[in-house]
Amino acid sequence: MKKGLLALGALFAICLSMMATDMVVKQKNGEIVRFDVNEVNEVIFSESTPEDPTVVDESETPLRFKILSDSTVEVTNNGSFGNSALPDTIMIPAKVRINDVVYTVTGIGNSAFEGCHSKKIVLPSTITYIKYHAFSRCSDLTELEISKSVTSIAKAPVFNGCYNLKTINVASDNPDFSSADGVLYNKEKTTIVCVPGGIKGDFTIPSSVNCIGFSAFEDDSLTSVKIPSSVTKIEYNAFNGCKVMTSIDIPSSVTEIEDGAFASCFNLTNINVAADNANFTSVDGILYNKDITELVSFADGIKKDIFAIPSTVTSVRGYAFRGCSVERIEVPSSVTYLGDGAFWSCEVVIIDNFSKNVKTGESVFANCGQIIFKKESVVVGNPDLSVVMDTSELKGVRFKVLSDSTVELSGARLDIDTIYIPSKVKINGDIYTVTTIGYGAFMITGGSNLRCVKLPSTITKIGDYAFNWVYINEIEIPSSVVEIGENAFSYCEILKSVKISENVRSIGKEAFYGCDKLDVMIDNSKDNIIIGEDAFKYCKSVTYTKE
Image (cartoon, rainbow, N blue to C red; front, side):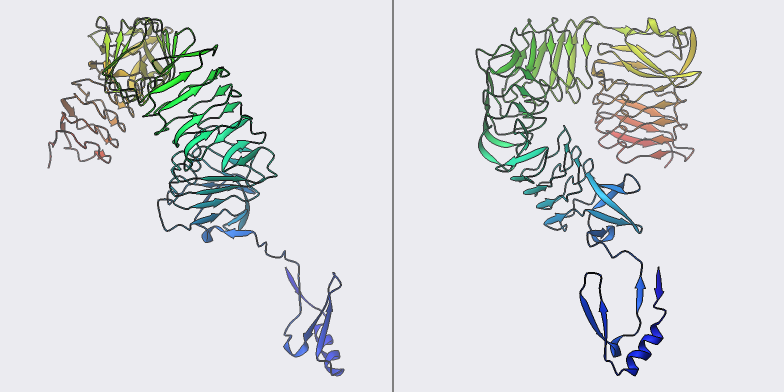
C-alpha cells in the first residue's frame, strides 16, 4: 500500500523559497542522502516489503515444482530432462514464485532429475530431503553439491546410472552426512552411502565403515572393492549392477547380507568368504549361509549350461539369480522358500517336485524365458463353469471381493496347469459372481506353467498384466468382456489364436505386445472400440471384420 507525502506541496514551496537545490533525507541508519529538488517528481512512503532477491519465478528456471503446503514445494520431474539444452550447472532456488505465491523449496522429489543432462547440480540451504531415483540416469552429471540442511537421503537407488558422477560434496556443517574424496558417507563415516559411478579403478573402503549402505555401489564401474574387517553389514542392492568387478572378498566380520547385494554383476565370477566367517560361506564362488541351507547370491559372471542348486538348500534368497548367465537352473525338492525376484530374467528354471507348501515372494519368475515344473499335472476347477464352487475347493486360487455381489480372481499358485474359472464362487457362505481377472493375476505368481484357462461368460474385464508372460497357447475371450487392460496378454509367446467380440470397447496399451505367433480376429462392426498404442505390435496377424 502506498500513500503520498501530505506536506509535499508545502515542502517544495519552502525549498524553492529558500532557493534550495537539494533535499536532504536522513535514513534510520543515520545515513544522509541528498536529492536535487529539480529532479524529484514525487515523494512516496511505501509500506510494501522489499523484493526478496532469493525468490525465482517458476518461469525463469527449467525446474518444475510440486506444491506440498501453503509455503513449501519440492522439485519434481516434468519429463523435460531429456533436453540437452539444459544449462551445464543447475542452481536449485531456495524460494520459487508460482502464481504470485512464494514457496520455500524443501526437497528433491522421486525421480526429480531423472535423465537430466546437466553436469553440476547445487542444492540450496533449504533442502532437507532427497527421495529415491532423484538423480537416476543423470549420465552427464559430474558433480553434486549437498547443502548443510539435507538430513534425509532415501534408502533406495538415488544415483543409479550416474556413470560420470565423480564428486559428491557435502557442506562441512551438515549434521547427518559427510564426504571424502567425492564419496558420500553418514556424518560419522560409519556407513558408506554412495560411491559415485564415475570413480574408476580400485576402491578401498575406509576402516571407519561398518555398514555398506543401500545401493552404495550400484551401477559402479570399479575394478575391485576391498572390504575392511570393520564391516558387519552389507545392505540391499549394495553392489547391484557393478559391471566390471570380477571378484569380491567378504571378511569374517560380516554378519548380515541383505537381498540383491550382488545382483546383476555380470562379470562377477567369485564371491569369496573368509573361512572363519561364522555366518556365510562360498562354494565355487557362490554365496551361501554357513550351513548351505540358504543360497544367498549366485555370481552372475559364472557361465554354465546347467546349475543344480545343492540338495541341502531349503531357501533361495531374493534376487539371488537376477542377471545370471546360466541357461538352465535346477531347483531341488528340498527348497521350501523362494524370495522376491529370485529368478528374475533367468532363461529356464526347472522346479523338481514342486510342493504346494512352498512359500514365494513377489515376481519370483518375472521375465523368465520358461518355467518347468517336474510334477503331475495340476487341474483346478470344474469343466462345467456354471457350477458354484466354494473357494476352499479352489486351492491356491485367490479372490478379492469387489462389491456385495461380485469378485475378481486376483491370483493363483505357481504350479497350476489348467484352471476352470467358475462363474460363481461361495465365500464364507455368500455367493459372488466372478466378473474380473485382476491386475497381474497370473503374471505376478509366475503363471508361465499355465497352459489352459477357461473363462466364464460372467467376466467383463481382463485387468492389466493379467496373463503377461503366461505360456498359454489358446484362450477364448467371452463375449461378456468389455475391457482388456494394458499388457494383459503381452509376451504370451505361444498364444496362437484370439477372437475379440463386438462388445469389447477398450483394448489397453501393448495388450498383446510381443505375441509373435498370434492371429487376432477383431469384430469392430459397432465402431466403438478404442485400441491403445502398440496393442498388437509384433503379432503374427490382425484382422478386422469391418475395414
